[in-house]
Length: 507
Image (cartoon, rainbow, N blue to C red; front, side, top):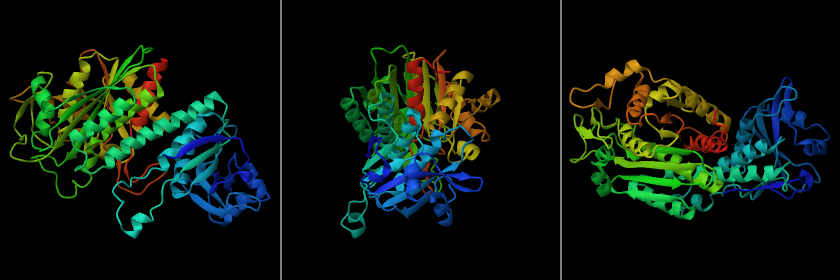
């Protein structure tokens, strides 16, 4: 992971591979952002004009390289776009800093040290910049260590980032940087899990990794294997995993604080590979299905982050792990499963499997009577059609809780949108042979899935469902601090929810 430090040193005298400055989009051309005054002075106050000549505009994500001025100990100045110049007396949005720092860190792959002279004014800005650096510097190269020349010459991520303008002895600044490093590292852990190939990350392997991390960070862990699941009556998880040679698992991670007054439960869908089962996915839809455990990865990372940050709230994570494969022992369309709650479900489509494993885990979480439950899942293609590839949907049985989660997501830079749970769609899941079917009306399929999950939340428990099908896996090119592949979306929202709950500030 990229090391983060604070410094009050002046940019010209800093030994580094590059000095990173911010550039905003002004009405008449690029504007050099605050924090880069010493750099601009070294260019005789002509830096904005030079950048304009080079074609820079200050647009978000834009990166421009130019030789450092005479007298600088760093050879390179890297100007990164912050987007539109803010109104007078208004600072730059933390997300703009996060994205700019991420783009710069990704550009500086191979560098040992870079100094970031971005417009930071307080601890929140420092945290956003540090987080952007750690997330932007991420790379997944565990499977690129061959003997070929390309692998040998692969550049390592940026090793160290010095944040100028931060005060090394200021408690708030140090705390913000520590939080950024912790959350960034755990989010990158989730990305690693999502990017791992399914032949190496089956349910058993995922559970083993969770056990190792739990032991390291003082988290209590319980793993239910296929025998324990059968004894306990977890028909949903067992039904989904019945077609695979890799048996399913239910992992419970419990972080407790002696000062906690509230209890949160996070439930993650962990389908380590989703072929669709007997309802096989069509060609072209299988290649990225290793990412169908992104919800479980986000829950896992969030619980570990809460433990590392020492948050004064109890957080329990439930990882519902299974591999959905077709075989002679697989669940068939038309089968009826008896769930952990006792309800029966008619399986009309085996590719609607995520809601089945989540249903069992939700009921298990409900039995402990937490103050709130949040489940996270790459659940429906319908949500991608509704919100695109960068925004996740939020459904809940409590409007205020849904709004609070939406605000938390937007605050940390994870685009989200509140979605309804229309009661008229529930009737479409009525079954003539079971208590409920796992499919309903095709139109509004993402909402139907939310209504199905609601059936397995204990009475009186506040609950929300995050459908992260769109932003969980980026099939396009990298942008801002988001890499190609697994993104780790929802980790920061869950951590922020835990922080707000611990402080009593949850709206």
